[in-house]
Image 1 (tube, rainbow, N blue to C red):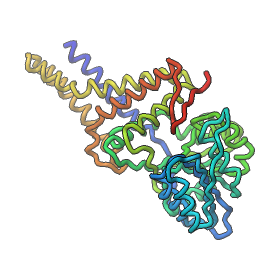
Image 2 (cartoon, one colour; image 1 turned 90 degrees about the vertical axis):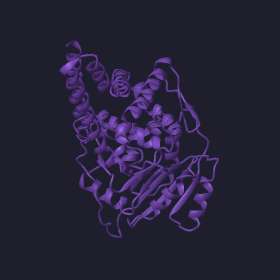
Image 3 (cartoon, one colour; image 1 turned 180 degrees about the horizontal axis):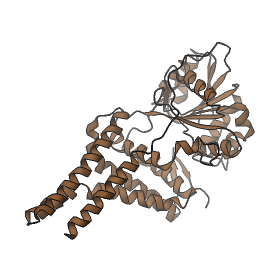
Image 4 (cartoon, rainbow, N blue to C red; image 1 turned 30 degrees about the vertical axis):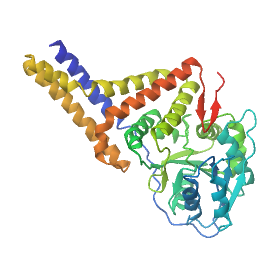
Length: 389
């Protein structure tokens, strides 16, 4: 009987947690494909930072130049790349005068890499709007027109979107869906879009901001030491009384963040570390998340087997009940994860890899928490960062 009671408590708790986790994605503002504005539309400057991006830079820049928006310029800041990034940019620029490649200067003391790159790009931008796009992000031809129309409709001063994640390798398909679900729990778009709340966040993969507002808040120089510069910029915008909007941009923008387990580990442990470091209270939430992920990774697969083992030892109908509860939880979990997989354009069969992905996610959480507790820094793009305590 005690086994059955424990199983039932876990059963009820698991169903509540699964429902809550998978019902936190409340992006009410959705970017849908829109027609381009008139030819006299204001100039939009697309600013793209690039550091050793030879794999992505051509597709990124060419997608930017292929916009149906009638008035754009594309500025790419090559952040001292050691690969063919700059060579590719010069070749594209020789065919399209709207592209301006810039060689970045040495990183000054007190600056993080990406804020400095965007600071340099924005310094030469001429547009009434600045659009910051990561070099691993690819725009549909109607992306700028659609986001500009939605920014005007929502009266946004800073307009940012979530993007469709392109998943290629096995590990991307195993880990990234779980990470994106965790992100949906970590922030509330409705709170961000509520001007009465202080909640602020932005996705650096795509940020569209009025130039007057950018200059008024001090631009990237104001957040020069921030590795997570997108969130810092969003806070400056909202906390100074300007309108911040986060929207669903999955229909018009795609991103390939990582290509392997190694790059995912470096990127996400960095992001998690910075979140925990900047907000110590988040350590408790991080501990809960890591514990939950470990439970999924270690206990969930053996739960039904424990019931079967007890049944074989004479557990009777109580053992059958435990097996039934475990299988119901599995069914609900697989259904929920299959829906997430389909939204991310991967096979629903990847729902079965939840224990494996949860184990990797738990390891990233634990590694990041340890970096905070031990005072270690993080490495990103070949640079070592150690935020001041």
